[in-house]
Amino acid sequence: MTLSHFIILSLMLCAIGVYGVLTRRNLIGILLSVEVILNGANLNFAAFAHFRAFDPTAGAVFPIFVMAVSACEMAVALAIVISMYRRKKRLDVYRLEELNG
Image (cartoon, rainbow, N blue to C red):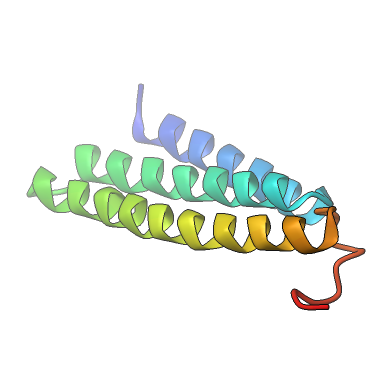
């Protein structure tokens, strides 16, 4: 496989993620779509590190950093989703106006 194969796969993952973010109404589905976008970016970082980098360890640092930030983001987002569900009993983003009330 060449670098262009990985770039095309990464672009497809990002496109699927953007489509999911724009079309989903459920908050959990939107969060999963954001994770697909981040996985596409991680694949891109790893592919460039493998094929083009002088120091392959430098390219491995970025996906690890993105995964750490993504884990923190998911923890905060899931806490907000659980709070919304407990208060409103629904997760439809078009029907949620605010967290309190």
